[in-house]
Image: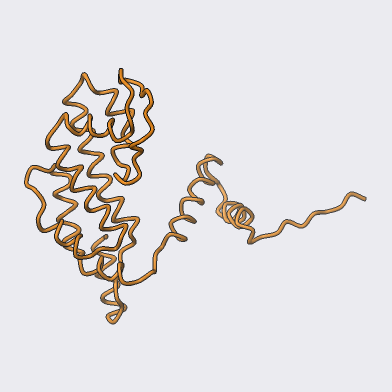
Length: 202
């Protein structure tokens, strides 16, 4: 969703249908909710540890939260489920709660490729959500035609994203490479694109 990319594609491939990978759409709204959580965490100092420890549960799809397994969570005194923990935290702040609810609606629409639900949610969002989510909604509305294309096609750039991340990990664990040639060779060897000839001892 980088405007220069879109402009370039329109210029070079005027007949192409532009799609936006679902990963980037989910990442956009997840970052907005997480920034909202951090903002609320700084306000509620007494619950700082709870917000910091269970951020993954807040970002998790509501459908994937465990509602039957009761256990003791750190920072809480009584037995709770994952859904209980999330409900406790979002109910501490109305802005966080409303942002969380619209996040879940958007996440559900994206996962199920429900364009009508996505469009309705974006156009009928509540005013008391965080500014971070409002910005994300504005961006999604701007790219709505391309998002519709992504729902109607099965193309995605998951393979490319995976390779990019793989290369970054190689670079990080090696603490950098002085030689690009060796860096490239390392990538190709790890990916099985380059075979090393074994020399037998005489």
